[in-house]
Length: 301
Image (cartoon, rainbow, N blue to C red; front, top):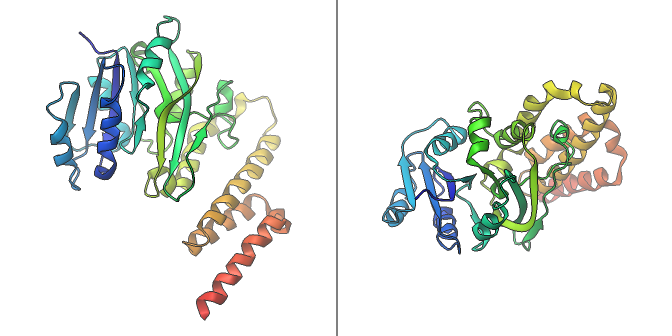
């Protein structure tokens, strides 16, 4: 019998998180699944971890070199046999009841895509945060800077027929391939919101999203800027909205980095000023500048 769920996990040197990821799937109260793990010849002990699960008939392993995360996930798409497909990065996890809730929701044959909330767990000591999901209008993808859409990648699930119609991830994308895929998907399908926590996202410091946050923004602009003419607002209004929003995001990143990486903090602060020069006059900017001066004084002592 074909499994109901196909879960695809791309893996590369994430051995310290991988066991928890696999165990979160093994602990599901609904057991009709296959877990497809695509490992890019990891060198950090992942091979031994995978060997511990190789006896489980629901775990399907493919260990070979790939050309990045999108390539690995596409390999999983080609292998998937389930009715419902999703991908779960090796540092994320599911709640034990996730599949059971989803199987009930997918009993409605008109439901093609489901998204839900995520529990975000930070490694900096902050308490876990429930991150609510949001999606109303496909055109909001084009406003990639605005936060009007909050789709959490491990908490998005879609039928096999959706994948067959939409195709595969674009393998030249490495940071925002999920948003580009959902953009194409939303042209044909309604996204059904299930108001449940469906996934656990670990905000670990060496994750690609955190380490390459600026690259994420650049790739989203590359994807969606060709579609700006589809929006009703004038380009000048969109440019102002984009600049104001990016300045805010860059200032937040500058604050977050000031104590651990002053060079990176300056980089983000300069980006914020570039997008909104008058930001220099705001109290929030003065607070950051004060921290720079304190840093210099303490460093010289």
